[in-house]
Length: 211
Image (cartoon, rainbow, N blue to C red):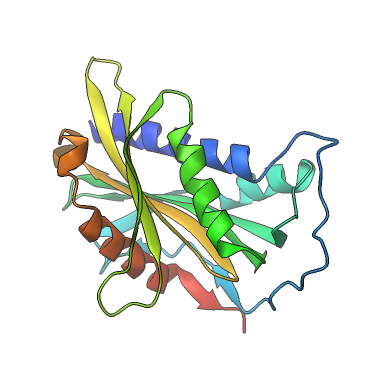
């Protein structure tokens, strides 16, 4: 179950990356006259997350960065993007965590966050089951936006996937955590407040100063 779910979530995350970071040759670009923020933070993929419960299983950051550099990039809202895409697994939780994002100089964080979720909702095989809603976890000043999509499984039925995203002036990423228990829940029963809280914790652990 976990192996199958890992593949599904990975495709979802990478589908967003291709849809929203890369664009066809000849597309519009530029950045207008507005200033871009200074580069102060980066996005990392540490060996473990969430108090060691999730261990790094597959870091595809280098591969995704090569794709980024070899394809035309829409830099309307972000300059010098650097990819961070990684998958974590947890034996104790029986789950999978996928981090998919980038760091750079992001001029419009709200747009970046919306694009991540739009890409996930429109990925091949995905159906938006619970629309995106903003959540600000207690004690945090960061807005996290969460939604639930469902995807068909090979053996029949569907799996519920909660997806949360944040974006600030330097980092932008989506976090998807799925366990065997949550994947079989009705989309409306997924606790998005808890998902947002977990995403905030992940952000604190992967967002690091450049210096």
